[in-house]
Length: 254
Image (cartoon, rainbow, N blue to C red; front, side):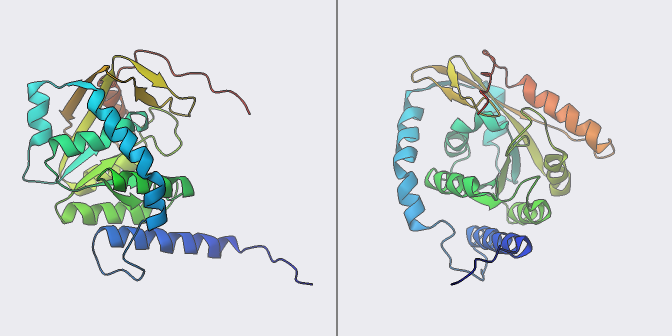
């Protein structure tokens, strides 16, 4: 009779980190020590219906954007770091596809198993992934994001992800912005009518045929300012361009 032996957590974490690093290197088209396809085909197939539905959903929305903000988001010539709250992700891929002219963007996505599904979905919508977060593989993720910027690609960060607290900008986003020494743009999405999920961030899903007001605001960063104070100020400015017309639903206890 065989006895089950508990998995060594250090080995499990090492295996997860190796897999995530392989996915990132494959996405960056650098020689990986793993198969070149970062997202398994079966996972791409599984998320295809959701990706198709989201694309159709986008077509129903009426989008407004100020002319000055349009000039900010369409400016080419240098890589850009885009920062938005996690609950505004529904239209993130559409924003990049529409206004960045196909310029590659890499989004920081959690190294968790849930993040693997989000990676597959974003890949189907035209956004590549760097796996990691402020709570998992943070140092490796920052280094990978620096490599993305060095290659001239854009970077997208949700600074309150992957699990909150909602609207709290973690200092890791500021570290990337300061080390990157490149343009930082805050993304705002004001939904006139949306459903809000009972998730930790009260995720917004704009109602079909509703109006969405987009903002793209360039954020100048003071390198000499205290990091925590600068992060709070950046979070405040990000919230200013992301008003909530309805409060987040109260989460039910399991």
